[in-house]
Amino acid sequence: MAAAASPALTLFLTAAVIAAACLCAEAVWLDLPQSGTKCVSEEIQSNVVVLADYALMYETHPSSHPTIAVKVTSPYGNTLHHSESATVGQFAFTTSEAGNYLGCFWIDSAEKGSGISINLDWKIGIATKDWDAIAKKEKIEVGAS
Image (cartoon, rainbow, N blue to C red; front, side, top):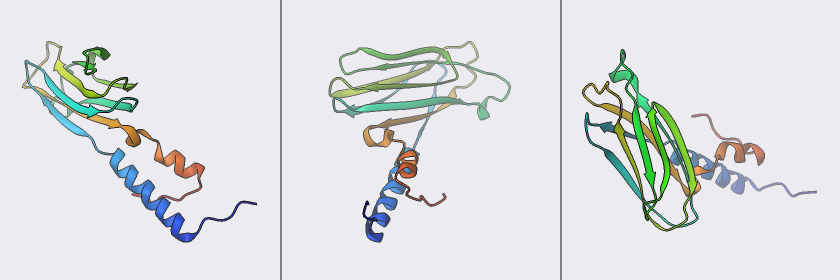
């Protein structure tokens, strides 16, 4: 029969799961210019999981639907993700070398307006874990947010 977890351990694990969940919820807003490219970069070690979701924000363009192109490259210039005519998307990879990983975004449609905004949620390493699923598996209750 397995021993029950002590209250202190349960509290610690709950706090760790909540803290990790807060880290996973962070995202960045990027304002893309009418012409040109906006890039973000992250220095990442090798053998690290990277997950990202991106989406156009339509509040600034309620009647038009511009699209973007996205390209993610490794420190050695290898293309890890490339998408065109996108309004939403995601990418995932495990790094094969340490260095600066680059994600670039640009408007690729005729409907450019005065520029657009995108929401980018880029997660690396431990932030990629699904902490809610782990908490359920371990029967840890996470407080409602």
